[in-house]
Length: 316
Image (tube, rainbow, N blue to C red; front, top):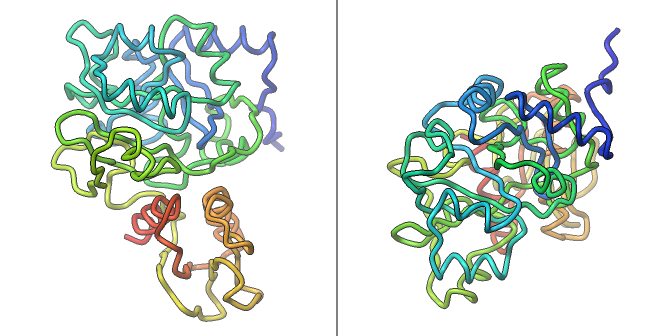
């Protein structure tokens, strides 16, 4: 019987050297971030990027986010303006991705950007990935470590469930946030392409302009933009007041009675806790054999906007 933990490795100096060797040879690694676990490869290597797309069964029109250690490295690949610097100073390193223009001489492979002139860049806060990024001389192309359109992983075993023994995974524990980064478009009309824990209101306070969330994109600039996404693989019905006993009922707060088929995102009505628990509940419910998921109404404020975005796409 296969040891399901055999591909999960601790992060230490010895394994750091091992990880770097794998990445330099165009290999793929499962890595923790503060948001969700990612599937990482060398952003300057077509071979590595192709492997990421193949493993995820991802559409090539869906671009990847490029992860950097710091600004000095990013400046070689992309154009950065004063609005970027304002937002970066406030929120990075952290759970926010910036859509910016790619330089003509950028080393980022076109495949990673879906052949667009723009690219999403992020500076993660998680210490494990930051230590790795500091040691390598290339950024990492890294989408969430799951099969495309499915549930993002928030712990190492989730990644094992997705890819079995195909990739090694660095154990960074449970993701602190549990939901993907905010994606802020800084090319043309400034807007949010994917809501996350950093809200439009917070960005408005920095840039002093109105920031809208754009749900429709003629050309996909941001991951998480497909209509069907974040799916647990069974039907999801949102904004429900009740649920038949034979189906799973995801609730929020103390409004709903505790039943055999109920799963509470946060008994304290804490939206940050709800975001952290969402994907775990999806996975656990499916494992228990439920055929459908009903979800109670979630407040559409703060990170609740991001939760509702994920639920809406999961319900398509």
